[in-house]
Length: 115
Length: 116
Image (cartoon, rainbow over all chains, first blue to last red; front, top):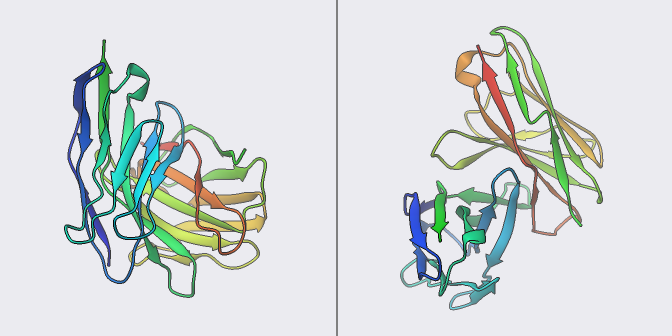
């Protein structure tokens, strides 16, 4: 089956610092990678996604490029803000038996941004 | 749009009792709902997938008689943890998907279950 490995946290950065959260995966077939974000007290929200090799997903200043040759989908942001403090989950789609899609998640990386 | 709620947000129960957790899609009809379990500092692990009006499909290793899932309407799915034990203490998260064939899942805020 699929598996997702992402860097452990917590990651603590100063405001306006550069962020990278690494995510690598093992998978069969043609999976699609995602980044989800969970703000304190809220549910997971889709942050960005990619559907094919070399696709770059972007949203709210965050970017990630789907690299099939390195099986990676690292999350980056050039200048983080305090409001970006949250837990970030890398996930990979797979195919459920009988159709549909299921997600395989990484362990999550907590980001703390300080003034 | 696409809001999913869970109730309760936290529950404490005694060992041997049963607990029901509700998952509701508030502004859309959910043809498919997913139930996940999350241990501290670990991944979300898919427990089961339920389609409205049919039996849930459980992931390997998940006891279907212990974790009863009902998806009786397009806006409500319930997870009942039967005869709960301390090892069932965990964070349970549901998600819902709208149109058949659509991919995106919308997640609830989770329910923290503590079994004493």
